[in-house]
Length: 548
Image (cartoon, rainbow, N blue to C red; front, top):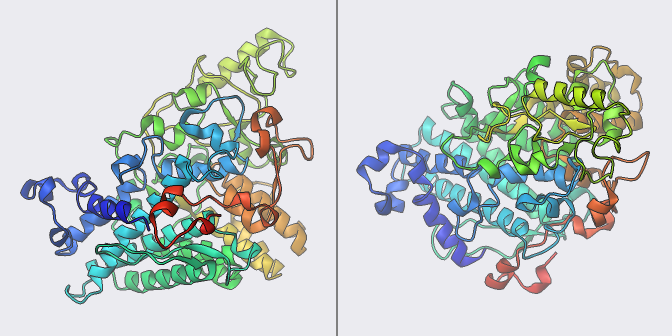
């Protein structure tokens, strides 16, 4: 790791991050007097450091580590980025707030000096540094074993696994399409004391081994912990044994350990029932939804606002990125949704194209081929605006979505950021069983989700491995649309991007440029993020030859 950055990062965890977590502690200890010994003196203070990691998931990155930038409010950016890079969250017009268009055009993660390549790297290592502080202190024998200590350790191990999984999935070749025993992964970092020296790049296999070890340690600690407390949306910011099992399911799926993936997915979802239609259509803006296993409960005082997830992805957020560039879904996906499936309701196929600068050249009445009557054009616009709480300053576009909706329409307040849901776990189990050629098992795994969403659902028609896998891919793309899984799904399935195929996605070739058609990951290393040039320049364990 880059020494200077890690040194200051850990100071940030012990100081700046803690200032946001507990006023009572700060009443007796001035902000500039917090020391490592104070922060790690007992379980209560260690919980403050842990709370800082929770908040750091969604804070603007310059408040978390030096060199961060306000343009990247961490998971507000990283979560939807997965669908932006993969071409699932489609831009309808040319707008580049926060570099969102550059990300879509593959002009960010392919450049080693870009904000995106650099800040994602340092954010994830910041999480690892914080987790190391808690793990190293909690296991050195100086504290009495207790349920609270075990709960803290469970969360710290889970955080470290989460960060390494994110790093290896972005900065290394996909496990299933490469040679994990020899492919370079990312550096391992275990230190919590100066000089914070990392190892050179470990192999992909070694990183996955560490992730699995950490998750096993997390589950063992959670089994002796206090358990996640009851409460409102804020408690789901705390990691839990369910989150650890969910991450184990994701990890196993990404490496082809199908049985572990299926088993862990079942464990992760047990306490989180599927949402009904009203909840699914409500906007995905709160951890209070029944099937949310883990998400950041965003504090109103955290000034992400025009840096938030919904600013980038929700068509009801009051920001120019959205008003001038409504986000649309791939029309090939939307057209394939049965009318009996209530998820189709969030995609507005017949929205009038009101933007004269729409990338498809069909914006404004007279250019929109779907409307020949201006009164009908205006009436439909008014109807959509009234239904979703927006106004005429917002442009509309065919196939625009209202899956992600602000809790307060046409507002700028940031909402919760959801990371893990029960639906994903059903889909993981189904995919794992299909890959083991257990078609009856895959059918039964998928049945609860399909029957809840589609009143005419019949899973039995998918009775071969090929048809079942194609259906699972469809269900993942639909159910998890906008939640950031597109990038890792493309890599796991070794699928490229082709906006032109099968009638076209609705994206503009002129706007998307080189990202309009992209060869599959096994043949195109541009799917792998560049290591930050600043890391290579400063870390003696990395050389220019280590660049992806």
